[in-house]
Image (cartoon, rainbow, N blue to C red):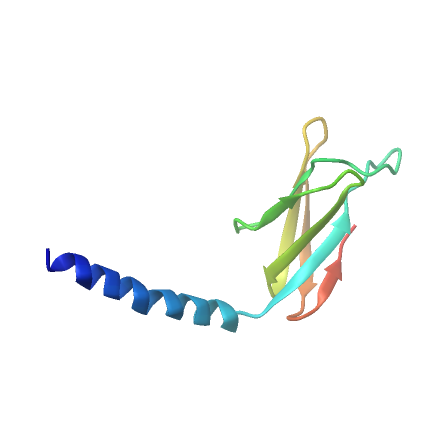
Length: 103
């Protein structure tokens, strides 16, 4: 039984440290719209992911998306939707505290 209180204490010590580290990471926001190249119509339910991370979202009914907290730096986005060829956009420079618009 003595090990259980030790484990609980460890969780309370580690949890606040995790929030501090996250707060120190500089991030920005990426917004945009995924459209059909032929018609120009927004593509609903396309997946938009920051390559090499688990950060991603889906597009809305008009093809718009928002990635609210992306680590600043050079990023790549991958867009996928059934019935369309996937597309990867590389070399996007995201500055901390800024919003990058990528259509």
